[in-house]
Length: 213
Image (cartoon, rainbow, N blue to C red; front, side, top):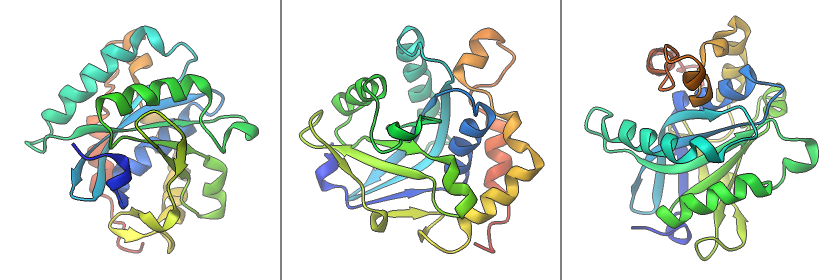
């Protein structure tokens, strides 16, 4: 099992990135959190799926159940065997956009204990207005020790290095309010008809034409 110190690059599929951002946009007045499913290939991590988890402060009661469900989803992804490799959170106050708050750090430490290659990502949706990548990543040095920022040069979106038009294209997509279709684990617990896997929306995002990016 690779450790975060050996990981040199992180990539997001467009649909994984978009779904995580959509989650923060739908619950813009709440702190949100979710998981990132992906795979490790040598010194690279590829995030292929986002799993919206919560839009409340009470994470602990359902965290273990949601993690188990997310891991099962990763194993059922058309034989891809995706792992739980990332934790994201968003809609934090301005002074909390540079580092993980204790509640999120505690969750992230559990991720690292289960998989040393795990990373955490803060979403700042205000960056979307500037057409720039909205996630800031961190790894944990020595498993659950000091948090180390992931340099932008190590991050790729949709198979390309950051820059260009990809984040801007996502901002264009938000104008049709597609993000309102997102359901997280909290939504599912209140209404079981809500699909926390967001299978339909994930499929739609995966087939969008991002060729202009």
